Amino acid sequence: MEIKVIKNIMQKYQDLAQVNRSLLDSYNIFSINIMSSPGAGKTTLLEETISLLSGDVKIAVIEGDLMTSRDAERIGKKGVPVVQINTQGGCHLDSSMIDSALKQFNLADLDIVIIENVGNLICPSTYDLGEHEKIVVISVPEGDDKPGKYPVMFQEADLCILNKVDLLPYSNFNVDNFLQDVKKLNPDLEIIKTSAVTGEGMDYWGQWLKNKIKK
Ligand SMILES: Nc1nc2c(ncn2[C@@H]2O[C@H](COP(=O)(O)OP(=O)(O)O)[C@@H](O)[C@H]2O)c(=O)[nH]1
Ligand SMILES: [Mg+2]
Image 1 (cartoon, rainbow, N blue to C red):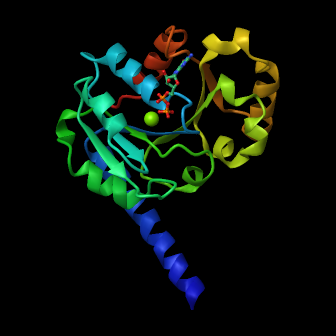
Image 2: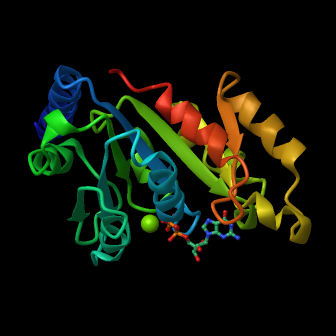
């Protein structure tokens, strides 16, 4: 009986994810779910992406954190619509939270909705929020061994961003080992190397995102 209840809850989240995706589709909006450990550089990448694409592309951001609205304040300063979700201890966002957040935006005026998930390489990987693509961000100081340790995240991802490449000269991060490990888990996963600080790779990433716009 208990198992049945759990199943029903999961089905509810899955159905709502589909509702979110259909809503985004009806407005021709492309949506991504960005996941990483805390501090890999998600918010910084978003700040720089907004600077890079503003004018051309209309972006809104949903920020997920356990507590505080610090990331939403950072994104708000960039002049785009932003909603902060506080999970109050929850380790991932779910589709009902995204449903509530989407209601805060004027969807007719958007090209892209970017979701910054709670910092964590485990829980967020298996929750469908209704996004179109999942992006995993790994940063150089975390070490090159993370794909093997957190395989589901890399198996579920549609794109991998290797951030903080400006720190490679000061680290023992082995890019070849990293690429090989990722390939074993997800042979077709594209990897973009970036530095949100020096701007390396940011034009390529901006173009990747622009190519996904549906209108
Ligand atoms: N050296 C370097 N630092 C970065 C880069 N991207 C982000 N950071 C720094 O990493 C820290 C965490 O960044 P933040 O964007 O808040 O990470 P988040 O927790 O994933 O959102 C901040 O001090 C950023 O300035 C990068 O490409 N290179
Ligand atoms: Mg952040």
